[in-house]
Amino acid sequence: MHFIDTTNAQRRDSLKGFFKENADRIVEVVHLVAQAFRDGKKVLLFGNGGSSTDACHIAAEFVNRFLIDRPPLPAIALNTDPAVLTSIGNDFGYDQIFSKQLRALGHEGDVVIGLSTSGNSPNVIKALEVAKKGAMRTVVLTGGTGGKMANMA
Image 1 (tube, rainbow, N blue to C red):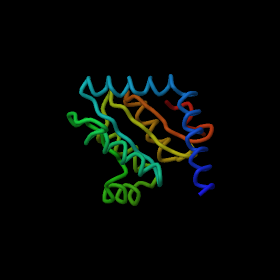
Image 2: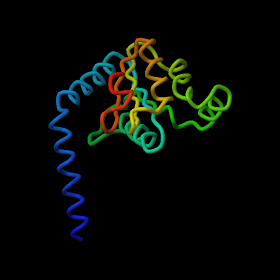
Image 3: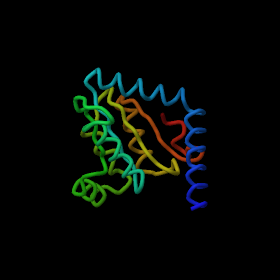
Image 4: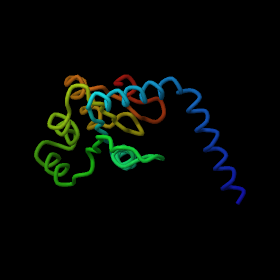
């Protein structure tokens, strides 16, 4: 039990530190997303592996609810349709599975959130580049130092 208690305490302290160090950035993202929803825009999220699951969870919280009942908010996780993912991967390459969807579904002013633990996922980077060219607002969620994605938000 000591191991579990210690691990939980370390996670709690780590989260506290993260939120303390990044409070301004978090508030900025919250305002960006809220303004996009007020303007009739949507949030598009994507990532690989565990980041894919995180993208799905975030989109679900927007579409359904989080803590309070409220109207649904437009959010889409681009990693949820296996037919789209595998057809793009097969015909054009795995590095284009998100960027091609952004060209189809993204519009100027939408908020695009790319997730990557390493910050170096080629398909996420390519999609963020497409988002910038399409005048979409970009947010990146990464681990460590942020990798190549650190300056793409």
